[in-house]
Image 1 (cartoon, rainbow, N blue to C red):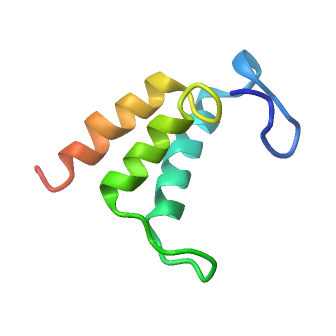
Image 2 (tube, one colour):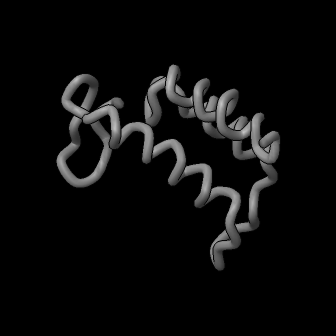
Length: 77
């Protein structure tokens, strides 16, 4: 959102909404999977990090939707 993204440094309205949705999901997935360079975050830690980055790295509304409608409804089918 803030223009620091790869590869073109797009910001605001120039970023397609689909890309912003994928960015939130991809970041959550990366935070909650094992990496050789860091420990896996818990669901709660990853959610806190998404909210910490909302408004700069991620669109705040999309973080809310992802957390409330996707993560909090896991396994409720």
